[in-house]
Length: 252
Ligand SMILES: C[S@@+](CC[C@H](N)C(=O)[O-])C[C@H]1O[C@@H](n2cnc3c(N)ncnc32)[C@H](O)[C@@H]1O
Image (cartoon, rainbow, N blue to C red; front, side, top):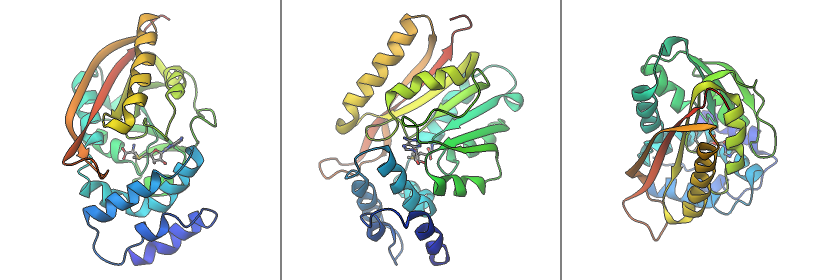
């Protein structure tokens, strides 16, 4: 990875140095390195800080999340592929907080072909662009900037690994709903470990309210015990998480 370091510094020259040391190791990566990287992000205070952190992590991200046994992209894909009806090859997918593109790579394996992506980190988008999978990739810091897509344009809107405390605020669900075609699907994931339980409760309250108001129809909610490896000192083994699949009501 050494030849890639200048790219990371290019994207991050304006940020603080707090993450650089933990990301830029000279040896083969271990789970401890990954834990240190993620814990360094917990010092960040808001969406811009978080996106700055991902700018530094982008080139190392996929190798690190493999060590973490990060299963969210596969779990969300399985959920979508097993419930979505109709022709997968013609469905338009919006991958929100797409990162390096792990979700769309998995969806492609299931027969989906049309992807657009949005992410707040330019460096993650740059890695994502190399997949060659996306028709459009837009930069956008969600919660601070409006989602830059057309209303009711997508058959499937998916957001994986980004709905959690300090990342994408729950209020963005409203924008995901607007982007979805009537009758289209919204797939979301979140962590269920202690530091994210308040966020998870707020997310579920919002989804329940939108369901009660007749704007969403619940398709499935799957709680997963082994979501990804724990990184915090007081946690061991795996932390839990959840995958939610909803349909936008045909008339609302
Ligand atoms: C854990 S990664 C998940 C990426 C991808 N969906 C996956 O599952 O591999 C979280 C992504 O969310 C993005 N992100 C975090 N907060 C954001 C925000 N407020 N607006 C836009 N993107 C954000 C980060 O840049 C990063 O690419």
